[in-house]
Image 1: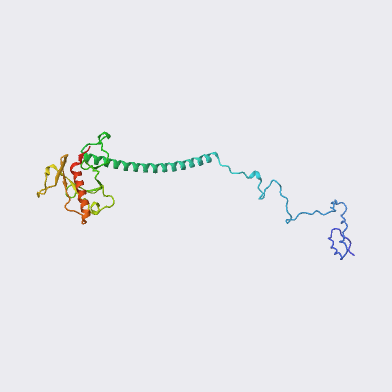
Image 2 (image 1 turned 135 degrees about the horizontal axis):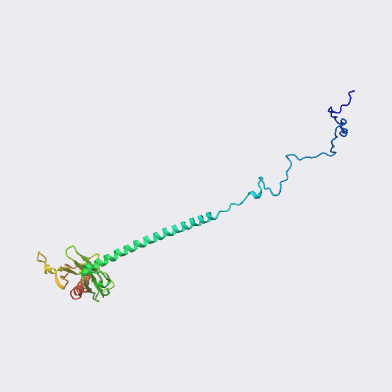
Length: 272
C-alpha cells in the first residue's frame, strides 16, 4: 500500500447510482505552508450567452449621448441660403417684367406705325403738312353722307333710296359707281341692286384732271360735268344698258337709276 502523498493528484471516485457525490477532505499541506481559505459555496460566473446589463446612460452602439450632438446650421449658412432664395425670386420677377415690357413695347410700336400711316394718308389726301393735332382737318359726321377721302368730297344720300352700295375703280381713271333701290321697295331685293351681280351698273362719278378737258384723246366725252374742285372735274356717267330682263324689275331699276343720277348731279360738295 502506497503511502498517501498529499502532492500527488487523487483519482476521482465515480459515484454509484443513488449515492451522493463523495467529498474529499481538505488536502493536507506540509507543515510550514500557509493554508488558503476554501470557499464553501461555489461562485457562479455568467457566460457569454447570458444577457449583459447595460448602463442606462450608454446607448446601443456604445456611444454616449454626450458624444452625439445635433448638427445646427451656422449663421453664415442661414444668411447665404436666404440670399440665394432672394436672388431666385428677384430673377423670376425680372424675367416676368422684361417679358411684359417687351410685349407692351411691341404693341406701342405697332400702334405708332398705324397712327403714322393714318397721318400720312390724311396729309396726302388733303395736301396739308400735319405735324400737330391742330393741323388735322375736322371731318363732318358720316351719317347721311358718303365721304370720299381720296377726293376730298362728300355726297349727300337722298332719302328716296336705300340699300345703297358703291365700288371705286381706278383701272382707267378714278371712278366711283353705285347700286341702290328705291326706298319704297322693301319686300324684294332684285339683282340690279346687288353690287355683286351688277357691280356699279347704275351710275358712276369720274374724276378727271382739269388739264384733260371734257374728253379723252379719242374724242369721247367723259360724261356730264357735275362738279369741279381742287384742280379736278367730276363727270356723271350713266349706265350703258338696263341690267334687268324682267319688265317689272326694269321699271324699278330705271327709277333707282334716276335717283342716283340726281344724287351725283346735285348733292356733291367738298369738305375739310
